[in-house]
Amino acid sequence: YLVRNREAIGRSWMAIIKPLGVAGMLVGLLLAQPDFGSAMLICAITGGMLLLAGASLPRLFAPVIAALPAIAWLAMSESYRMRRLTTFLNPWADPFKDGFQLTQALIAVWRGEWFGVGLGGSVQKLFYLPEAHTDFILAAIAEELGFAGILLVVALYAGFCARCFQLGLRANALRRHFAANCAFGVALWISLQALVSVGVNLGLLPTKGLTL
Figure 1 (cartoon, rainbow, N blue to C red):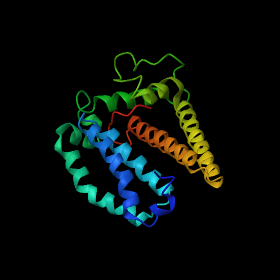
Figure 2: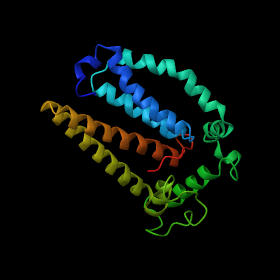
Figure 3: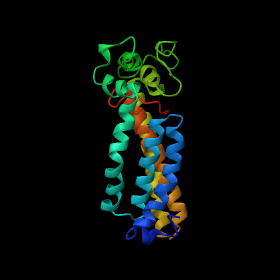
Figure 4: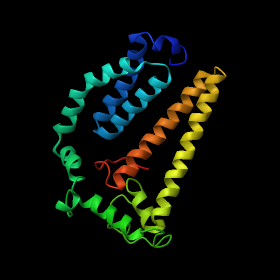
């Protein structure tokens, strides 16, 4: 759809509403699980793809502003979501309950220091750090490989996503817009999910169950 309507997206509301409607159905299914984090990720990827496909910022901001009350209500409608939003500000206030995941992750990062305790030498992943193989795998990497390991992982993700964007721009120049949008979509998906996961592991963002 974005390929056939690349020019229309820049000047037509309907050209923006249609792909948003498709994304809205996916978001609705995710919220029914419920999976608030993945739903917001889909929204961010869709917005980014529309922007790269030619949509103007004012046209994109209007749906975002209209959806803000609903997003705020969804975030506050469940007590566990509110606890996640507030706990990351001071996880040590409740280190054995709501702040447990983040405190254990921060302990793992602290133990790793500059170059880590050695590959396979993590203690935190042995039943201390929850979801050490998925949501909090970066904390386990940080413990074993240290700050250098974190930099390596971030650099690999950055290189992969930069290459995807480069391929997308090259495909656009060749007027292969379908290939371009596929490359842009993959880049946005991987980079946004990695950004959130890294932020959660380092205590920069509220705890959210997105895998790295």
